[in-house]
Image (cartoon, rainbow, N blue to C red; front, side, top):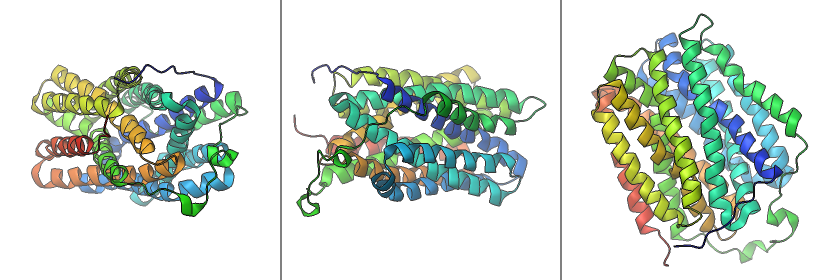
Length: 387
């Protein structure tokens, strides 16, 4: 067991937390919108899944650009510019009523939000040192708690006279409010930018096999999370007979589990290694998936999604913490690699499940989840550092 570490929540930390909450209004808003968008456009599951692929492809693009952007403009500028561009993508989806516009909106928002997310992760890791994994988990808990409210608003809007599209304006309002209230708060710079870790390029240590294997684990975990985000509501509707709008409350239950899980994970990782917390979370996700996949009553489905959310919540922050640990002191580069591999997983998972759903049905296609869980667990066990 590792010694307990304190977590200091100062103003820069709260700025990052709230930037991630604003990021969450986009992520979970567009996720909740996908079944409704599919019904409005009248497209197949495979075609609808292209929106998730576009979002993830944007994330990969943002990941490749992340190190250059933060090195040239600084983390503060990159974070705020990312929020502005993310809002532009969301606005394109909200105002577009044809597939090319909605796909372009998901692509742009995905690229910009990747810059916001992974810049924030690098800031928290550097700023909090040994407590970085706990700060990352807690920041994601704040984001998911925000996502709960967003998905609930979508569920209400979808069944009301105004429709679901006005709910997509929430990220724009959140960004404006955050800029007015905390736009002047200082953002910690990277040690390299501050001149504390400047080393010749030739002196850099190779990443090593644990870093690359952890990248593969992140791919599996991200594919699993986005598969649930984009398709769980659809399966929930099929299994319980709820309408697409009402089934969006299933995503709210999953997000409630994610908020609880990330708060739980933030405390556990102050005492246990991230790999131990991650393995426990993968086991919990498997239990939740089994309950959700086998149930046909709404209460059972809600319970399964809540447990799945609790497990999924810890996958990303713990895997990212391990990736930063194996990066030989290069958190920005680790964040960029995480964006690329995570984006690849976010693209592949939902699209593969959508294609399998068209061929075999969504219920059978969701057997992809335990496969991804098994691969992630195997990679985590194999890459654990010696005590």
